[in-house]
Amino acid sequence: MSHTRRPTLKNDELDPALTEVSRRVIGCAIEIHKTLGPGFDAAVYENALSIELTSEGVEHQVNHAFPVMYKGQNVGSHTVSFYVDNRFAVMVLTVDREIDGFDRTAFRAQLRAAELELGLIINFHRRRLKDGGLVRVLNPDKLDSLRGQGDEDHDALDHAEAMS
Image 1 (cartoon, rainbow, N blue to C red):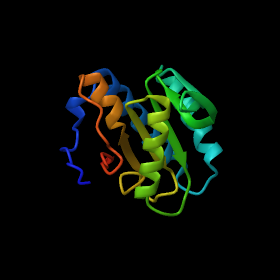
Image 2 (cartoon, helix red, strand yellow):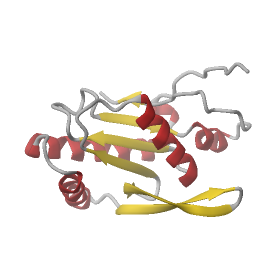
Image 3 (cartoon, rainbow, N blue to C red):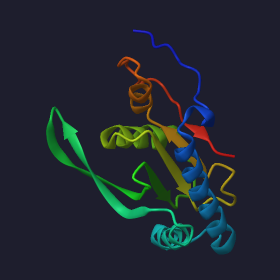
């Protein structure tokens, strides 16, 4: 079965309020990275990001758990580093490698389970965040439902975009 690849979504296709709050989160992450640099445990960056988000007036929950459903039954839960503005998830990493396709695919599955349209992966272990340390991941199923489009098979699609 062949899959048709849709064009990559652009920021202007997302809700402007969602785009704005995600930019604020990215700004906070950049400020933290400039101040602390790489080399600490994820908890250090999560604590610092919570402080920054609070000072910016961005509503967030730290280590928020979402239920995982399978055929209508709860089979467990998945915890994200941050649930921001009751709209999107943030995963904080501290790994000595670039964010790869598996990271994006796994996070997209978690976004689907939580029925969220957007997520950010922030890897504070990079020398510079803009060099593979910030990645936006979109949930095409949620975006299609918001647009009123039909349910298609999106498993082979990769709508993740590197932030720069």
